[in-house]
Length: 290
Image 1 (cartoon, rainbow, N blue to C red):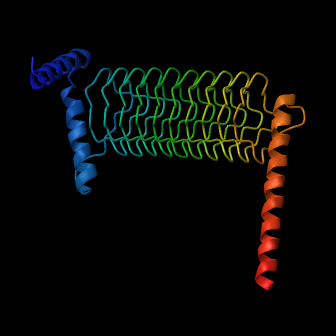
Image 2: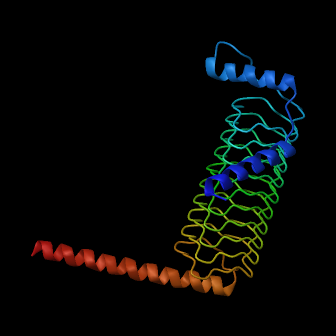
């Protein structure tokens, strides 16, 4: 079989699979989407979509523009939402479990209390979205854009967040136990009171992050950047900090001895480098005067 024929056969298989797993939209829902598209594109016509409490289970809504639409408590279980636009939409308390939201735009959306259990969010834009009290257990958020997203008190246990952009995100009080956060950008993130026991934070950027009172029991922080991070009153027993960057780390004296020894060593290195730099600057000043 030629490569082109194989691709065609694979495409037909995927189409059949999609048709099997999704269901046709009710006529009235299709009309609501059509009117909403007019409202978005033309501004002076159409009607903003209101699909509150709608039953959209297994619906094929790939690529649909739901920007600024109202979908609170909607049932989107198992729906195909790949590439859909939910910018600034209201999806509060919606059920999105096992849905496919890969490459979708959810920036600025209200997703408080929503259920994302088992949802595919690979490459999804969730920047500045309100995700408070949402359920993200078993969710794939790898490489997602979560810039300044609100994950306060969210269940993210076992979630995949490797390589995700989490700059300035709020994870205060969130459950991130056993989550994969390797290579994640958590610069300036708020992780205070978060549960990170058993989490993989290897090679993550946690510089300027707030980890005060966080539970990091048995967490993997190897090769992580913790420069200027706040780890005051954090639980660090069993945590792996091998090769981690610990410059200007804020930490209590009751931390494990091996952590305190590493921090003291970093402080000594910093003082040596600062002294060396000062000496070099003085030498140059003397040279210039001569």
